[in-house]
Amino acid sequence: MALNFEDIVGHPALNAAVQAQARAMQQAYEGNPRASSVFATQQRWLMAHIGLALHFRRDPSDYRKELTAARFVDVTVQHAVASRNTAHAFIKEMQHYNFIEVGPMADDGRIRPLHLPAITLDPLIGWIHMHLSTLDALDGGSRLGTFQARPQMLARLQPLIADGLISSVPVREPQQTFSLFTWLNNGGVVMDWLIAGVDPRNAGQERIPTGVLSIGDFSKWLKLSRTHLARKLRDAEALGSVGWLGRRGHSVMWISNEFYGEYLTAQAVKLAIIDAAFAACMEQATG
Image (tube, rainbow, N blue to C red; front, side, top):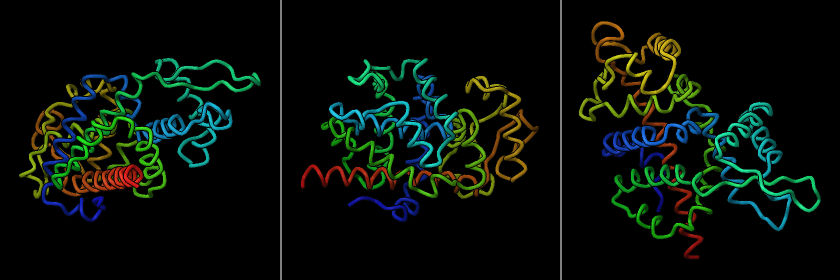
């Protein structure tokens, strides 16, 4: 049986499991910053999942069910994830970095299907591995091993995950500080970095120390404008969500217990969606 949100958010092992996941996400970014940037903001993350779901649900024998730029834009706008212009720009950027390729023209000369090279799926597979590992850490399950033994599951699993993410109000409308960072370039990476440096034993404190000591070093690692990052951190400071234990920008940064709770809540929502999708896949496979 899949773990639901209540099972996950109240689990005593969640703090340690989420910190391990944040560290894994941090390592994935260090290994491939370009690919990680596809998921760098909430909007881009959702658009990527829309595109991947259309890819897995395509039907080459029916041009109306192919992955095309027009279909991607229509679905993105239909779900109010982004404007047409933003969706078109995303497609062009993915083409520029060879994450998608334009296939040969269809017989009627109007349809240009989009194809995903196999290497494009590697970051997605890694992302799924991380989250299945987190779920296994909570209940001692074997989801990751099952997925690795059945790689064909990916084509069924990812579209179900995408459906869950796009239809989830908590995902689409995150809490205030979490929302503040989701619109920042590499904002998800910023939050993962902050959480990765938290000692789970300090999770109950009002001001929880992180591993961040310098805005300058932080911005260089993230390849972000120092000015832009500092501005977002000031906004978070104004909310009481982050601060410094000593001189601003030159001492250990802390995050508030409330912000930490927002992050855990967001992870619990996402993990519950992924586990429900995984359980549905397993039910289909054994049904």
